[in-house]
Every structure is written in structure tokens, then in C-alpha cells.
Image 1 (spheres, rainbow, N blue to C red):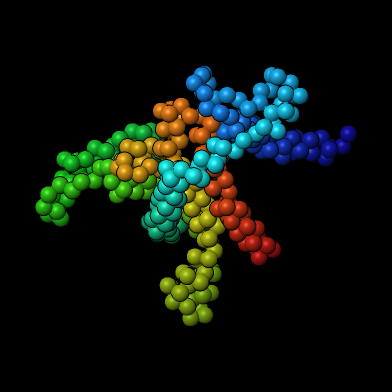
Image 2 (cartoon, rainbow, N blue to C red):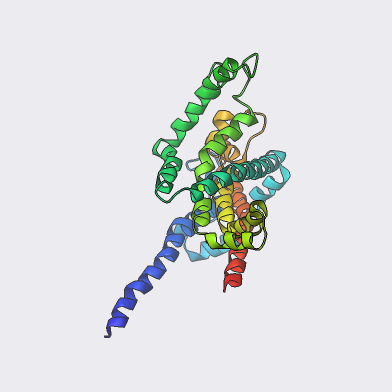
Length: 304
């Protein structure tokens, strides 16, 4: 056996590893959730009646497939609770992602323009919040935003307000918590893209008469779009299903889909409907992923 063939075998197995990972940790759990979503609610443990049971043999499974019902998915489309939860989740995710982009892009751009020796320090400062538990950080914001918290004390001391402002249990508090928690996920992909840009392109634009602002919009920003897309997806997808931040900081007027899923799973014990809602949420995430993939392919095709 040649040396080339010997070294090719590990490379072949390494190429299979990502697909194996996806099968074990995505497709298999997805199959269990889909199975539950096609089941019927029951007062039992677990709290559902399986439509088909693998232990009953292939004949029973084949017969069960002919009796599958999409009633749980139909309930999602007919009940205003789920529709409003999905709509609110999408609105919150879009607004939060735009806020994160507006705040994160200048920070990432400034980090990329720093001298080389200072850039690792700036990156470390961005990553430092991850050294503390996510839940502890959100509880810290409860103390900051409460009626006699640090934020109101600072605003009163600066005479910005004449009386303490109500922050907790509002959408404002929720957006503050989301932006604080997800800002590193926006900054890091943007920084990774901006730090690789060729400075000579800006020099060429300046030589051709472009002002710094025009050079930014014609050269820097278009070339940073892969980082913008990656950062937007890294923020939009988890925010869409966020549970902890809205539950602790936002009001109870309307719930996001993450809170609705928690309510169905752990309070109402309606696992089939909750599983159907989770499947619908996954389907909702497919279009932005497809859009990003097409954008990446188009840019790679243009580069080639």
C-alpha cells in the first residue's frame, strides 16, 4: 500500500466526522421530537400516546403511518397564542439583531484598526463576559435595572431624571439584556472579517478620489458582508428561541415562543403540541440559513 493511500484513509474518516456528528446530535433528536409532535396528549408518563411504537414491529409501524395526524400543527395555525408568540419572537429577533449590528460594527471596526499588539487585548475584553455564568449576568441586570438599582442612582445623580424610571418588566430591559448578552457573537465574526481586509484597497480608493466615508461604503462594508451575515445569524437564531432573558427582564404582556414552549412542556404537560411548536420554529429558521448559504456561494463564485 502506498504512503499516499495510507495518509488518505484518516483524511476520509475525518471528512465523515461532521456528517456523523449531524446525524447523532441533530437528526436523531429531531426524529424523536417529530415523533412526539405526531402523538396525542395523555395523562401518563411520558405525557403522550405514541402514534407508533418501534417495539411493536414493522407491520404495526406501517399501519400506524397511515393514521398519522397533523392536528397538533393545525392547532399552531389556528390558536392566536402561538401565532402571536412566533410573531413577537421574529420582531424581537430582527430588532435585536439590527441593534447588535449598529453597536457591534463600530466596535469590531475599531478593534481591526488597532495596532497589532493591542488587538488580542481588545478581543480578550470582548470575551471576558463569557467567563461568568449567563444566568448570573442576567440576574446582575435585574439588580442594575430595579427601582433603586445602579442605573437609576446614576441617572438621578446626573440629574437626567427627576424620579426613578421603571426599567424592569419592560421591553426596554429585555432589549438591554439581549444586546449585552449577544454582543460578542456579533463582534467576533465582524472582527475576523474586518481584520483580514487589505489596507491597500482603501489606499487605492483614496488615490482614485474617494473620501474616507465613500471608501468605507464602497470597499470596506461590501467586503465585510460575510462577517455581517455570520454575526446576524449567530444572534438572530438563538434570540428567536430565547427564554431566560424575556422571562426575567420583560413584562408578561406577551410571550416569545421560547416561553410558550416552556409553558407547554413543563406547566401544561402538553408535549405533542410543544414538540410541534419546536418543529415549526426549526422550519422558521431554515429561510435565513438558506439565504446566508446562497450569499456565501455567490461571493465565493464572484471571488473565483
